[in-house]
Amino acid sequence: MPERFKAYDLAIKGGWMSVNEAREREALPKIKGGDAYLRPLNMTAIGEEGATADPDEADAAAENLVTETMSRLAVKEANRIERARSRDADGFKAWASDFYPDHQSAAVRMLGSNLLVVQTLYRAQGRALDVEDLEPLIRAAYGTDRMAAAINAHAAGTLDEYLEQIKEPREDARELVAAIRRDPDV
Image (cartoon, helix red, strand yellow):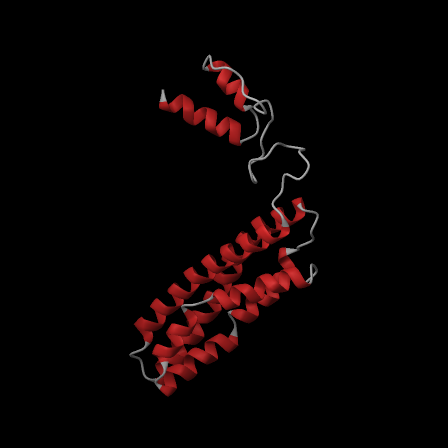
C-alpha cells in the first residue's frame, strides 16, 4: 500500500495526475480544486494567475539558498585551512595556490546551480535574471582576493579571526542577492 501512495505523490507532483484522479482511484470523494494539475516549482496549479511567490518572498528564498551554499563552501574552506595551517609561509602559500582555484570553480558550480532555481522563480514572476551574468561576481568573491586574505592571515598569525570571518557568509549572500535585485542584467 505505501508504494501506491508514493506513486500518487510522484504523479501529482510531476503534474501528470490531479489530486482528484488519485482520490478517485482510492474510492475517495473529489475535493474542491483537486482537478488542477500541479507544477513542481512551487506546487500551484498550472496556468493559475498569481501562483508565484511575491518578490520579497523570492528574494528571501534566494538569500537563504545562497547563504546555505556559501556556508557549505565556508565550512569546506575552513576545514582545509585548518589542515594546512601548520605549514610554513611558503608551504601555506603553495597550498593556497592549489586550493583556491579549485574552490573558486566549486563555488561557481554550486552557486550557479542553486541560482538556476532562483532564475526559474524570478522568471515565473516576470523578472529577469541570467545566471551566467552572475559568474563574474561569484568568481570575484572566491578569487585571488580571498586567497590573498588567507595567506596574509596565516602570515600575520590571525587565521583564527579569518576563519571566524569566513564562517559567517550571510553578508556576502546579501550582497549577491542585492546585486540580483538591483540590476536584473547584473
